[in-house]
Image 1 (cartoon, protein in one colour):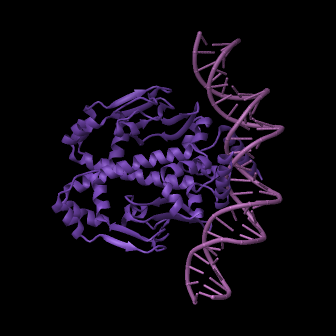
Image 2 (cartoon, rainbow over the protein chains, first blue to last red):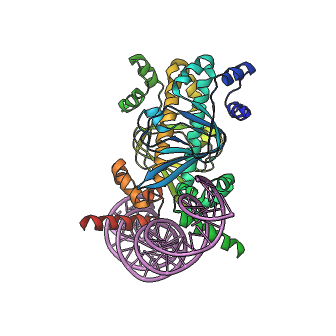
Length: 193
Length: 193
DNA sequence: GTCATTTCTTAACTTAAGTGAACGATTTCA
DNA sequence: TGAAATCGTTCACTTAAGTTAAGAAATGAC
């Protein structure tokens, strides 16, 4: 399980065995049941998440309707907006599956940083990395039709389509559940000829 | 002009007069004519931009059609994806207006960092900041209809609607120019009653 | 296992975006 | 200045997404 964490960190910096042990001793791991809501709209929180196993979902409730805008799976990091701004959250975060997380907060960052000066460097690289990926995703979203977006998802994150309910996927694709059903039927029809 | 730069930096770190002078002496300023293409698809580049005055546009050409995905105006920073990855660019960057830029590259970062240790810190804060804003924008885009997106733009960046041609705005909103025309007419009709 | 709830699909209808074409109005540039 | 290209709007038509409603299928609770 920890391997996922160390594989992830290894993408950015290298750790000694000793450093790894110190990290593990911090006891950051947390196991969360499917359906648990980690963050609610209006709530303040200092918790940042890193997914070791499982899946988190970020969603808004707008006019009484859930609007899912992101999924976080293995190796994904998630710092809710409200953590940086110290404002009430505009969105919810819940567990799509039973999930194992690393939970940290900015204060611990300071502490950890004292022991690992490299940690700061890694955080910057991570932020830049996420930003770059986010921008590409956004561009792809803007330049595609819902159907293309679904096909892209099928290519890039096929696991999501299996592990996430359709009605959550649909708003992630920017459409209604009925439209996703129809769109899938349309694609199937095409492939048959 | 430099005030824009220092106002921007002041959001993150504070500089002494001496430090400001050193920064100015680096001669990073560049004036670029409207229509100039700073980066082309397929091209490699190390240049990062910060807009002091004017407007840059990022666009793809997909099936022979320009798809605009971002505009960068005063105080916006832009690091093309290809700079970090050292791969050919997938998109173009051009000047919508005569523009004054600060042009840097990662190597200079090393040099600058020797003189300003704070610089590194600022870059991380900036990356985190941009990431947070980007995520909110993306969420907003996903959860809105084209019409809502246009109204949001009218609220949040009214200047863009003035300074940017309609057909570039439209793909930024994820629709065709004709649809933007129609949508504007529709809104006007509504407001009349 | 059964009942209730949630989720997914289908259908009919409405609304809005895509497409192709035409038309002035600008803008560009020789 | 005058011709050519670009740009914005409009129109008629097509296609796809939103909406409302209903029913089938899967899931969960007891």
